[in-house]
Length: 471
Image (cartoon, rainbow, N blue to C red):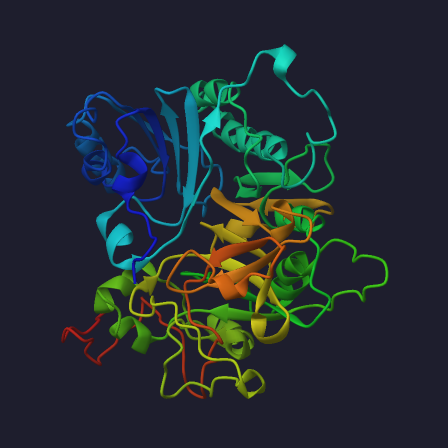
């Protein structure tokens, strides 16, 4: 169901685009260039930032070959100091001829399959104007550091770009340009990761990984009722044989919120669910087993088997239509299944959403990000060092919550469309729509069901008659 969705051409097809900085893990430069307006695609200054730092890497050589066909494309390889780190952020920065700039943070690799037959998401900033002369500026300092404000987003975003310049100049030209633009129209908190060791208590206003999430959530009011956090990802890394990191570091960071208003009970710790497809859901997806090449976890080693044991109670289906899955909760018998229309488009999207209220009708906060469930993405304690975290990869996401839009606003999920129905909005109250990519309520895995594993062989044919053999 593609109502209200955007294509790459919708984002890049405007002839007023003068310059594009494209950050990603995988790149098809011919596909990227085809999305620009045909009259100007040979004029747009295109910068491609990738993570293939080894000179003999086949992916780097393929990129260089593709870029050689486009004289207006410049390649930059990101500084990656961590052995197991990747340049996983997915973003475009657009500088336009009408003196505006736009930031697009999304979940798709820059390859055709990701933009067509898989479920993805994109956050598009408003068009950002150039800063007005000083005499027209609001010089109040109160808003500058407020979590969720455009001023704070700008500080964090430019600090993120500065991480690329740790060893050599990569992003300084775009940093210098963006410094001239007014970010005040942005509502949201940047949640980013950059590789390296980071002090948790340093003076920098910008935190990384789970610490960034923990900091931002201190500004987010929570529904004073039972709630759940749905972690929906396309990859689960090796988290350890016990759930120590998952519960004491990651879930703890995601459980926080602003102090409740006087007279309201404090919000309890949320329940956590992990949305991840099974082999059957991959078999039935639009590309069948082929889409499983983009979705990863492992269960083969003894450590991974132990991890599966503690994750199993948290696992929920992507498509929510498994004959072997648990019965759908009836939510007091009156909550219909809300159909998202995406169950056959395999999930490469990554969303973290805190639902509150009866039948998960309201949303406390939502994050769309490149970050999967991994220590490399979110960070872990570095060698037992107190107050220090180690991050391996570049990641990028945006956190939003209803209070950014109005003091008494509510945020509600929408299905099959980006808009709320008239009856879903209380008269005189602000309501914010959030497109949900999966059906609700969530269906837990049934007995014997396991997550999709791309490194295992799957003999049962997919809907196209293909089998999946892994050497």
